[in-house]
Image (tube, rainbow, N blue to C red):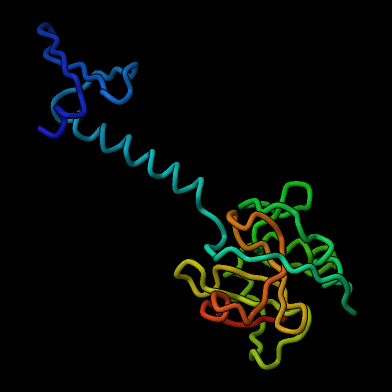
Length: 195
C-alpha cells in the first residue's frame, strides 16, 4: 500500500517484471519487482537525507557570535592567528587560501611556527598534555563539546578569557570569542598545551 502512493506501477506481461515511476521524479524510471520497489523509495530518501546532513554539517553548532577584533599580543603565534581573522570557515580545509575548519585553523597556525599537531581536534586533545583551566596561558588550546563528543571543537587561547577559532559554517569565518560566553562556558571541556 505504501509503495503505491509513491510509485506508478506498470506490469510487463512477458517478463513478469514491474516498471515503476516515482511520482516526485517524473523522469526517473526503474525496472523493479514487487520486493525492491519498497526499498528503492527508502534508499532515495536516505541518500537525500545524507546529502542534506553533509551540507549542513560543521565543526560546531554555536550561537551567533559578534566578532571581536583583537589586534596585538606579545606572542608571534597569537599575532599570526589574529592576522587570519575573517578567513571563511570551510569544513575539512586548513589553509588561508581555501579556508579553515576549527582543527585545520589550529594546525595551520602552529605548523607556521614549526609545531606539528594532529589534524583532528580529538587527536590534538589526546596527543598534548592537559593543563588546568586556572593555568591558561596565551597559545594554549581550548577544547569544547559541541556535538556530543568531549573534544569536538578547538580554539587558541589569546588572553583575558578570549580565544580565536573557526567556529562553524553558520558564523562563517575565523573570529575571536569569549570563554565567558554562556555557550562556550557550558561546552568547555579542557585545556592542552602545544609543546
